[in-house]
View 1 (cartoon, rainbow, N blue to C red):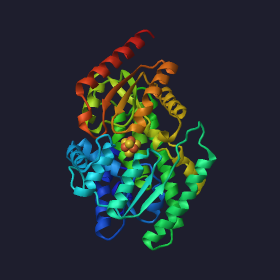
View 2 (cartoon, helix red, strand yellow; view 1 turned 90 degrees about the horizontal axis):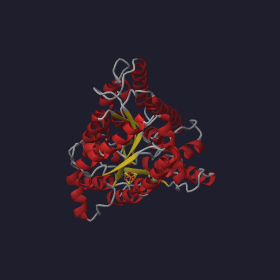
View 3 (cartoon, rainbow, N blue to C red; view 1 turned 180 degrees about the vertical axis):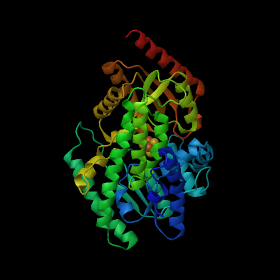
View 4 (cartoon, protein in one colour; view 1 turned 135 degrees about the vertical axis):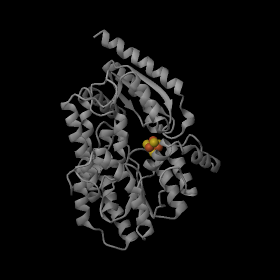
Length: 410
Ligand code: SF4
């Protein structure tokens, strides 16, 4: 039975999500047991190639999210540090490299890979992380090397460089599977993946309604599908259902903060603080502050015309982490304006240097050009040692006071 058959339109999008997430890793384990190939992939790599060749793909970053949210990361982080990985290295990398050795965790067990795929369009930590996996497990490494876009435009030279690497990925996959590349399936997967990207963006863009029918913290849950199943039809089916539910809520003026009125609208900058997801959400909710803006909707809005490899290369090259400082500022300005945010919360995430190092300048420019209040807090996407509940609470309290003052001043 394929996954499209285990969900149907009579279900809510939440029911579909729960079923698909539970089945995703189980399918990977079954694939491995029955002799199929499993790939570990970075979160915004071109899934289209492995999907076309029937290679079951799972996502270490998403796997660590499940572990960190269940508060199971410390054991893995300690193991990695004991092995010599500095605790300044990304927590996703440390926890995953430890998992690769111990193959035990508080969350779902993820089968070891036969191949790894990475695209460094989100950061270069991934390069060393995935090289390390490939070297340790002696499995092939499929690499889409994406240069950083230092200029304000994504250059044609960068797009050509990325597109030219697709032929090498195809050659490596043919070697690995012993079969010719399935161009017909590849065409179908491209259609599905680009439609899913549209469906994801269309559903999450409804956060611009006032009140927003969706809390950004609920959006974090749906993200699992766009990360892990972007090449599969059931992913889009769930987002289309979510969109219709949100449209209904907009009609009824129903907000996404369950049990609380939306008084303030904030943009969240950075990755969620997974070990303290509930705390970060509840403190905001206590003030009626709803997270309506984030960079996540656009991060997976990888839009291209199916069949057009150049557009596909451009989409993977242009994603938000890989663009110039000006591009990153403009991206956030658009989000803040479109979703009508009153304030910004910046997660100074110790794990993710690529995000952190730009935040100070991005914040200064947002304050200067939009006059929007901004607060920051120290945290980590996986390592609970880097977060203080008291600091978060006082920073949010201060932000709310400024947002309230601005409202009163009109
Ligand atoms: S969290 Fe940051 S450092 Fe870690 S893999 Fe993602 S982008 Fe890279």
